[in-house]
Amino acid sequence: MADDDANGSSPKVSSPAANGLVYMTLICFLALGLLAGWRSHRNAGLFLKALKSQSMWALSLNFLAVNIGSGIFFTLPEVGTIAGVTGVFAYAFACGAPLFIFAVVGPAFRKRNSSQWSMTNFIMERFGRPLHILYGIASTLFVGLYLVSELTTIYSVFELLTPLHPLAPMIVICVVTTVYTAFGGVFASLVTDAIQCVLILILVVIAAIVVGVSVRPTKADIERAGLLKPTKMGGELFVILPLAIAFSNMYHQGFWQRTFASRSDHDLRWATFIGFWLVFTVTALIGMAGPLAAWAGTWAPDSDVPGSSAFFTIIASLPGWVSGLTLVLTTSLSCCAIDTCQTAMFASLYDLVEQRVNVWTVRATVVILNVPVIILAMRAPDILQVYLLADLLACATILPVLSGLFRRFDFIHWVDAFVGCFGGIIAVGVFGQVYLGNRHDGWRLLLLDGGLYVNDERVLGAFCFAPLGS
Image (cartoon, rainbow, N blue to C red; front, side, top):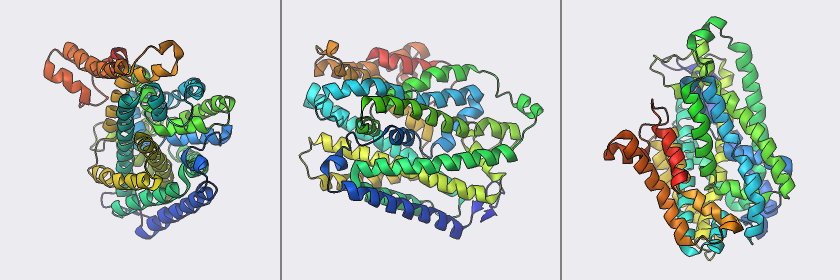
């Protein structure tokens, strides 16, 4: 199945095997999506909203699906190589903990939002058209950024593991998810995500067992790497990442769709609890590939290999069939992430036009928007950087909007919320100017061009002052 590449750095799955694995997986998912969509494609309620259609266990798997994508193969191990085990657990906790917010906010949402469908629809009812437009555009951009990062990851994984040109499978994955979500809507996405996540959990368990049996660093190797010790960066990540991910989730329609799909508030609460542990377990296992690669000697801080590739240095040391398993796992994760983003983008756009445009026109718009997303993904932007920019913008703007959920804040007008959103952005720039001592670097903090891993507290301050300023 696998051949060593020219540098011997990773065993590549041969072209026939790669094509067979990827396209057979996609054919199965396409058939599954169309089968699920058969129930919903003529039912407008299931197609557009899927309200109260998901049980506790199905919803738990869906919360896992909306939280993970193939990007976790790069971002999580990289955290482990820089901030150690503390950083891995901080990231894993931050990925899962924000689900509990939906267990609290979801029931409040059901009471205040008459249609119980989406945040944008609620904002229209509560604040009016101006803020509705702003949030709708922001939500669409957010989902677009998530799609860019996901497709960038697919491109990179196919480059690392196969001799195929990544563009073809990347486009086919987008086409497959577009077809079954266009046919079955939100309900098809929910059903396929739940089944895909069962497959993902099985593959992750198999991979964890193989790595545990095959990679056995000595105690001396572990002590030499020093990644077991608590780090300052790891402690800061326990603050930065939960704030970043919690607020950005509020802009992701995929989370709201799943919240409204719960059969009851009881199912929602249990689904967030189970979903938290599923997300925490999967992300922690993947993230530990970073420290493990350093302990086993497959990756070193002074090597030319970036920490984001630590996971794949371990894969390179294992039998070739593990690369094939990783390819199937990547395809499954990508389908989960992309179909969720596509249905979320559809919901944002459909609400943005106040549901007055034909559904298929909006669907066609989503397809067209996939084109610039693919072009941007081929430029291989820094995946973590894309996430960070979206997260900081969310931290700066979402609290004024969420205040509308609670009757004690009924006095807040759309103008107040609008000013609050810009106040959060300005607060980051002002903090940066004061902290860094000059206007240029201070306001560039809004771009986070230094990334997450810096030697001072500028990023921590930005994520703390953003919500305070709003």
